[in-house]
Image (cartoon, rainbow, N blue to C red; front, side, top):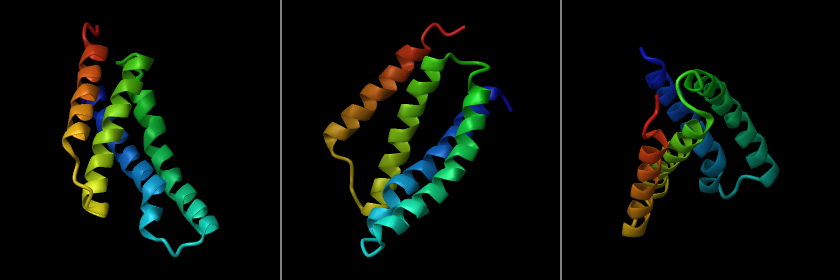
Length: 114
């Protein structure tokens, strides 16, 4: 499997864990703050287990800026799915326009890549 595919798969998995760590505790309003922090850090450990290899693999074929722009786009897409599934927040038109702008940013960041 090409490095670019591994990069995208690992980064997507990383962002799933990141999103759950950052926002999942909001569903558990009765959870003490300290417990939410500890639980989030435990989940974030797995985020790093995927994110670090993703960036190492991705940096073999992409520039650092391209890695970051792609990561932001993946983060937003994963978050939108999470918000829709876990919190029943349906994206509004302005959110979809924002996503389109970010996808455009990815396009321009990767334009002319060697």
